[in-house]
Image 1: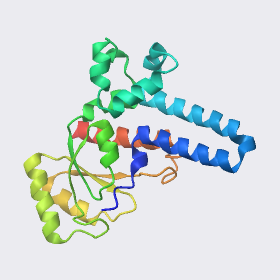
Image 2 (image 1 turned 180 degrees about the vertical axis):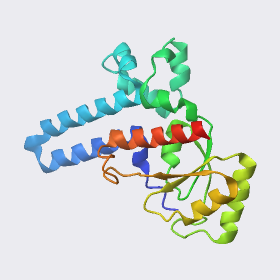
Image 3 (image 1 turned 90 degrees about the vertical axis):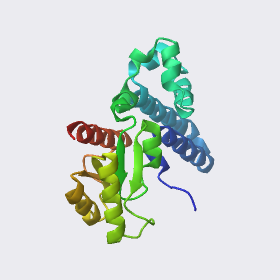
Image 4 (image 1 turned 45 degrees about the vertical axis):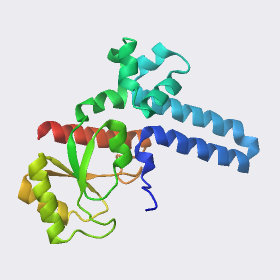
Length: 211
């Protein structure tokens, strides 16, 4: 009822979060506002490059990141690029995620709605019937039946949740449990936002390609 808090897992949202942080820091420390704004722009440029690819951004020029962000947010990115014969230049996370489009997965917790929406992944169910409450046996069995019906191959399980329910369902269905991290610093190898999103995409691509 209070909404889903995992907004940072959409790279387009992380730029808004960064803008809000920079604005507040500038209010608190006006003398360093130019530094905050410079760092903000550097961060946004890095995210745009990882999101869309360097070649496409260079082709579109200085406003390329803004244009592509707007088109992606409205679900028009691919059609807009196709209309301008630019789709072949798309790179970065959006290019990598094309193989995930329409693929069905199950997650333990309702963590990935923003991530899935951005990268066209279909989350068909969560193991938790109610957030924060471990699923009872009948819930696990019901999700297992759904996984079999819909051919789901991957169950996403955040690293800080017990994987008992996911392992049980996987043992009954043949689906693979993918242990995931959703925060920077949750693992030594995930020490930046870019590495976090790359980890999630790499893991999903590998798991769904192998299944």
